[in-house]
Length: 144
Image 1: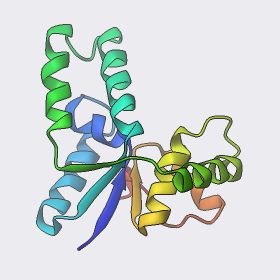
Image 2 (image 1 turned 135 degrees about the vertical axis):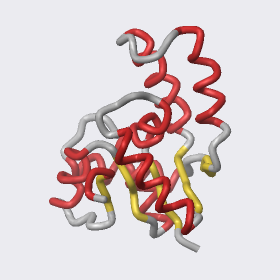
Image 3 (image 1 turned 120 degrees about the horizontal axis):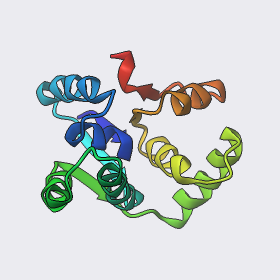
Image 4 (image 1 turned 90 degrees about the vertical axis):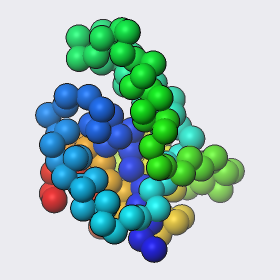
C-alpha cells in the first residue's frame, strides 16, 4: 500500500476555491484508484482551522459555511498522527536544513521522512527548497 503525507494547504485546496484547487482535485482522482494511506501530523488540524478562518476573512468562505467545511475536512480519510519526541527532533533538523525560523513545514517533512512517504504540498517554494537540500520525495501538486 502506498503511503503519502499531505499538508494543510493541499487539504484546503479540496474545499476552497484556491488557485491550485484543480490540481488537488486531479491528484485526489489519481489516488482514488490507488487508495493510498494518507497521513497528516496533528498540526494539520490546527492549520486547517486557521486556513478556514483566513478564508472567511478574505471572503473565500461564508461564515455560515465554516463549520460544515471543517466537518468535511475532518471527515476525510486521513490518518492524523500525533507527533512523537523523535519526530519533533527531526522537525527541528528539517527546519534548520530549510533555513526556516518556524518548524511548521518541517513537521510534515519529519513525518514523511519517518514513514518513507512522499510529501504532497501546494507550496511550490517548500517543494523547491526541500529538493535543494536533498528531499526528492517532496512533491508539488502542480507537477502532476
